[in-house]
Image (cartoon, rainbow, N blue to C red):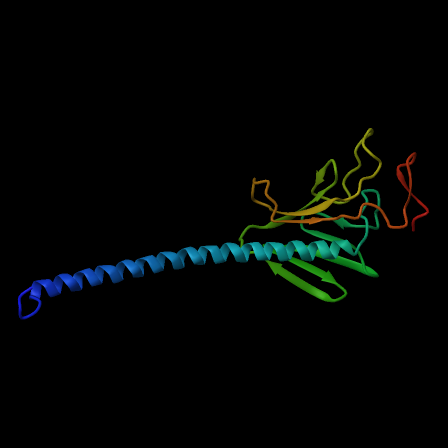
Length: 189
C-alpha cells in the first residue's frame, strides 16, 4: 500500500477474496437447501404413510372382530376388501399407489409418493395370507383365528418393510363369555 491508497493489485486481490467468500457462502446455502428438500420429501412420505395407516385402522376398528370362520365379516384379497362398519358395509381398495376407503360418508383417497403398486396382506397370530378369510389349516391349528392386522406392502418389493400397518386391537366381542373348552364366546351376539 502506498501513501496515496491501495494499488490496483491490492484492490483486485481484495475483490477476489470477497468473490471467493460470497461464492463459498452461496454454495453452502445451495447445499443446505438441497438437504432440506430431501428432508422435507422424507417427512411428507412419513406423513402420508401415517395418514394411510390411521385411516385404515380407524375404518377397520368400527367393524368389530374379524374371524377367519366368519363369512359375513371381512372379505378381501390383495387389492380390495370389504367389511361391516357402522350399520353397513365399508370397502377399501388399492389403486396403484393410493388407498381408497369407502363408507357411508363417501370416498377418501390417500396417495403415497411411490410409483410401486401396493397390496394388502392379512395377519393372524400364526400366519400371513393374501386373502381373508384364509383357507382353513388342518388340525392341530385352531378352528378360527382373529385378524390381528392388515398390512399394506409394495407389490414389487422383496423388502419385508410394510408401507402401512393397521392393527386390530379388539380380539373378542365386548359381551363375550369366553368358554375355555370350546375356545369361543358364548352368549355374545
